[in-house]
Length: 118
Image (cartoon, rainbow, N blue to C red):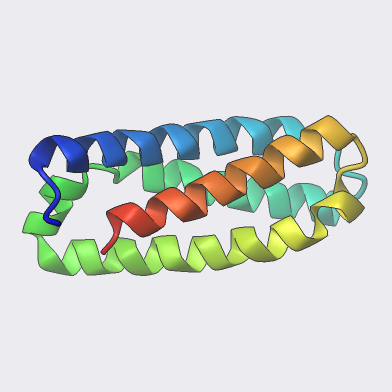
């Protein structure tokens, strides 16, 4: 079934919201990380999300094929890093609610990105 323009805009808005929420959760989790290396890793993930949020007009980017392909690669790379981080978050963040929020945020971003970047 072909997606309508409204469907695409809704999914794009959902992805942007998912990234915003994850950015917020990562920023919070930074303060609970136990080592400087973990804090740097969290800050790096948050910075990558911030960059993607600034590039987030998918329809405009699709019109510029090269930039769209580059953004897809950036998101795929970030999603891999997020998935790896999710597997280790309990070792890094010892406040259960904070680590759960981060894990849920990562899952939502990865799932929603899959709907948008086809």
